[in-house]
Image 1 (cartoon, helix red, strand yellow):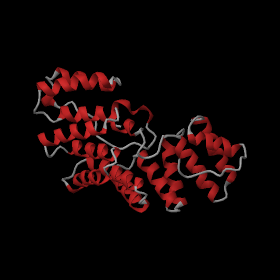
Image 2 (cartoon, one colour):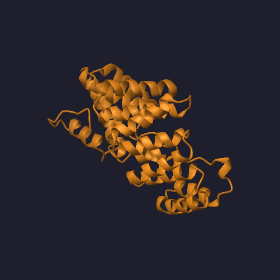
Image 3 (cartoon, helix red, strand yellow):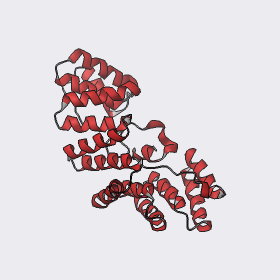
Image 4 (tube, one colour):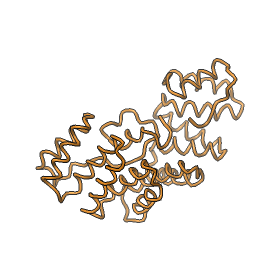
Length: 267
């Protein structure tokens, strides 16, 4: 369910657990399709999940449309369809599919959070916030951590950095090993001039993902701000080694080549 600017296309790697190989902290958190025991006899549904895991999204969409015809009352089918459409960046279609799932089961918190992600990607921020808040106002569920994280991304898009930092902290209170939340909180803290807190967050990410280019680059920026240029250069070198063609890698190369353009916090 699982590059880098919040709101970019990399949300996909966070949404579809089947394509989680390359997420580096920009993606929204949504819940993947589940193999519900009640659907164990639905060949089309199960086949579609297998296709999604293999990245065969177009085929999965066709099979899920067929599954909706044969099993029109089960909300898991339109939820899975919505995730596939979200991967395709068909945000309007994804919102429609998640809404169908919620019409079938108004308590389906995964579909509500997923719809919030689709609304956010479609630029419907007020509707997205309403969905995330509905998850947070509901009964206790693991989905609340995802809702806090997504709400943090929404605040980031609005450049409400203090609110974003708070939501990422709440997500971490629920799931303390969420590297994406540490990364995003670090970026928010940079905007709030909390360089020490930001550095702590980026170093936490690097404990688990030592080649993460965003965390390496931003750790270098933090170190530069405190005058630790030699140590910053090491993290710049790691950035180039990990992702030479990324924007962070290009900026790190400019720094290492002593070009005049200063490092930047945001991509």
